[in-house]
Length: 244
Image (cartoon, rainbow, N blue to C red; front, side, top):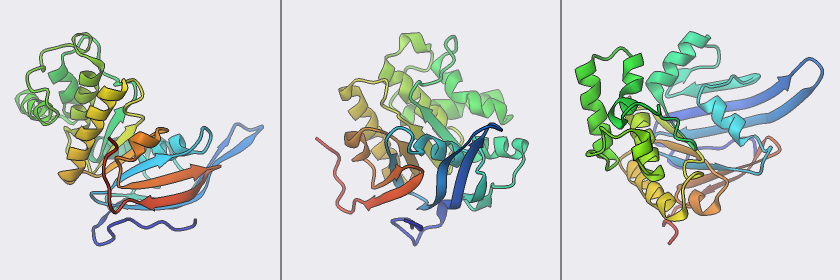
């Protein structure tokens, strides 16, 4: 499939990738991971990216997250062409435009939840009082307003992931990226977390999630399927209902 359009084309684009190729070359061997991927997502969309191991979904997520560069093709994030930006500019874009939620939570072990959430604002140079107030508000959004002084070891897995989501929201990102966000959680906790993602989407958040789990993907409003570096499926769920 050469061209994929957003499910709500009346909204501005949050991401716009065109003819993206990614080739890893160690000098002896070239491996093509993405083969001319074109994908557009409107602001406010909720997309799940799926595919078997080796399909290119993690590479695509890294490119969307400005953690890696395409070998060829163009990428606009929230209207900004990031294809030719240098490393410093990409780091700034990641800080201002993207929020990341990882399978492993990636919290600082000896730092309480409030300061874990506030960390991106520290790097952005926001004064202490302001960033802690914003961190408290983010924790309130994910239902952990009373757990700000707890360190990760004092929180359950689900609570730790909620802290990670609050941290991802702290800069009001254009796109929230989630990489296997329920991978370290039991099914009940995972369902609770996905209901939180649904609420965030309903509030207008743009969410792009990588998952291998069909049940988790059903929470999204659009499912992109990759195989051998190509997009082979694009399903829009007009009558969405979370699995029961």
